[in-house]
Image (cartoon, rainbow, N blue to C red):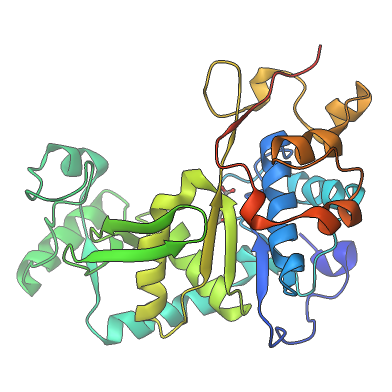
Amino acid sequence: MDTTTVFGPIEGPPPAAHGAGRFAPSPSGDLHLGNLRTLVLAALFARASGRAFRWRIEDLDRVRAGSAESQLADAAELGIDWDAPLVVQSERTAAYEAALAQLTERGEVFECYCSRKDIQAAPTAPHAPPGAYPGTCRDLDEDERRTARAALAEAGRQPALRLRSSLREARAHDALLGTLTAPLDDFVLRRGDGVFAYNLTSVVDDGAAGIDQVVRGDDLASSAPRQADLAACLGIEPPAYAHVPLVLSASGARLAKRDGAVTLQELRALGFDVWGWIGRSSGFGAWGSFAEALGEFDPARLVREPAVFIPPE
Ligand code: GLU
């Protein structure tokens, strides 16, 4: 997409010395009320602590045409400003390659020839988390690699690249959840289809943009230890984390488009008070605007349980 004409210049001032927060949605569809609430909270955490607030379009996967524009338009409609530069992941390949080269040089990357089926079928190490990579390709010798690489190439595939983390334990601190601990498996840095993996791109981009505060939905809390560990491997200071509770539907599942009127436009069309709901469901009053929210916001008062939303008819 031509971000220069749609959103203004991509080059902006260098990251502010006082740090920055961010919102990093995948442009896979319109934001629903749960995403909008996370956006508002991320912007509040950043602005209330005097930080810049940045926006990143995570468009390496799951892209729907027009979604990035409509997500940004929703933020504008809510009165949420973000600071330049707007980061678009599909324009950042060189940065991901450089990070991968840095890790490769230190011997921390290995090729993996396994299919998903191979991984499921292999026995896992005793303390590995469920679904963890069993280490199949970690210690192959050069001959074995050559054979496996050739077999994959014959099938028109290329190896995935994994971080050699050998199941050490990683930690991250979360302002709302406390210490997050996770055993690291050798997670994927670049997928077999050549797409750079979320953990790598997100750490590289946060580092480059001077992001020192990551506020996002708590479905991503389990990613924080591995991202903090990877940041440290790349010489990037890990950010402060705050994983906020999700918005659920009546069934207790994460809110989704199929639940009914959940996007900003759908809710506005029904006369629903989006700002009021976001404020109340977060443990505050019925906010009317971002300025009003900023006046009342206090991270210590944020509700720690998921909110339930039943769409209006
Ligand atoms: N792009 C991810 C998502 O839409 C969020 C990534 C992040 O905040 O680290 O779920």
